[in-house]
Length: 352
Image (cartoon, rainbow, N blue to C red; front, side, top):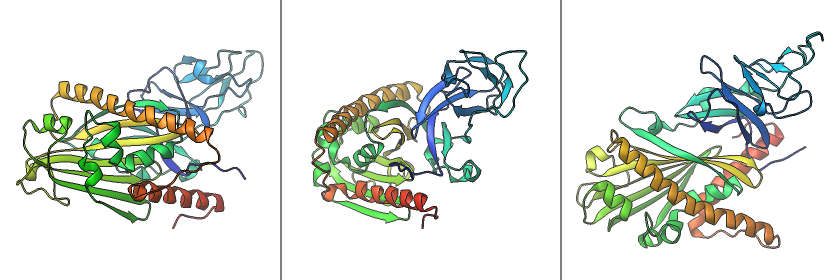
């Protein structure tokens, strides 16, 4: 029985909604080569990116209405993956020739693909990234292919003490190393909470707040299976009544956002990193959104440099293992959720 480092029978982000258009998009998801495109009525189609004839990638093919024709010998497949025309026009159509297709859903600005038993795909089980699609909030971001195990990115996002050193020029500050953290688990969800009262705001948050002075700062990291981390972040002026449990911008006069991260495995040592920020302040300022996306991309580029170097070091030091300290509690618990789910998949039993 084959095993992998990712869960199955769950939804994974395959692309941003804007990435998938009429031209085929090739992307490897959880070890499977896939092709995505939109039909004339803008539905997203996902199918195996290999012609069932000679295995040329179908993403190299020619779009004809809602169908795709292989560029090698001309086999034509419909959006259901079933053959519509044979390479030789004189050859009788064989509709048993087909390619696998996958369940797809669009929600929260993302295209989601179901990995596992297609009959079990339920859009209601898509992770609840509510800030990405709630009126009054704005959301945008980007995508990077990262040469590391997707779980290293989860570790990174569930332990934000790294910001002090990796992101010292933007969002990092020494207080991150000093503030206590509280880690809790609830079924498949893991939460790491850090509350930092009465500190100076780092450069980004000072600019977002549009004022100087001491602030109360919070970071609440939520791991959501199979591979998303949603981080509730923000600052409020000291004395405005913000607490770790009540820090909505409208009540504390602060600025609040949600860092949205979904890590989709590509292979065992590479992944797709879909990142962004949803916020409820300056939501109508398109220029700020574009500038912040550029800044956020720069911050995550610093993470990618670290994580790809870490992956190479893991491969170069097979006699050594990752160690976990107190700051790693969130990542450790998230990995336990993943491990339990994989074991349940292998045993073909529901995850308790």
